Length: 264
Image (tube, rainbow, N blue to C red; front, side, top):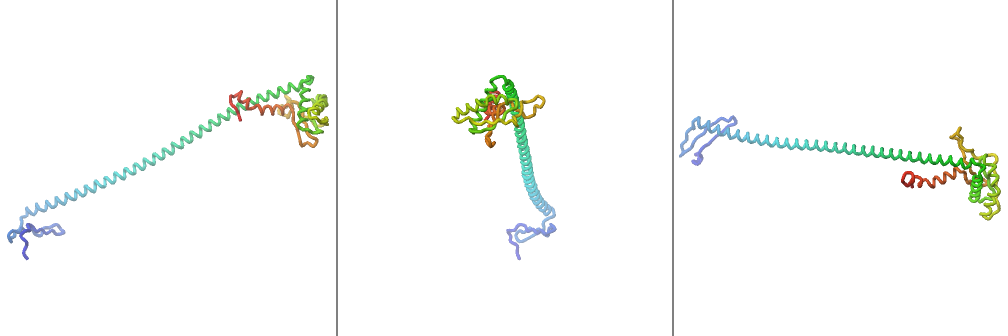
């Protein structure tokens, strides 16, 4: 079979990269190339293959470096995000603790202020209680007798009973007996009824006034307690009870005058 004249070179290359033959064809005649030409041709092919291999390797290296940098950046950003989130969480915890501590300190301060205010008010009430004793101690003074009469009339008007029981301090018994009839008549005139029956309890008395020897004992500064005969309705009109009523009513005004604030 004849070889076409337009083919310049025919090269065969086996798996072990050895040259089987290189022929130059021209006008139907052929001759073997010298060793130098073959060597140059092989070197060019080797350089070309090596260059391609190096370029490919470089591409792989660059691509790997880029992927590594991207992955590293992602990991770094992920860790930064975790650190930021952890910092924000701890910062929120610190702020919450600060608010809690501030609230606790504020509440403690308010409690101390309220306690101090209560102490002042308690001292005022204690001083007022001592003043009540000055009223009841002056038995010769007609002021306390008239006060006992007014207290009895008030209880009668509240009870509106035809027969009542009266209890007083033992020290005040003779004063009560002195004003009993006039008190009953005054009530009858005001209520437009017959004078009621007033039975004085001579067995059980109200506690005496406070004692310096036993300051914590139950005491009564004066006044009376009246009740219906069955004991279901009681009117406590002692000086101490009256002081408690007035003090409760006036407490908002007292606080405002003392501390500049109104209390509901």
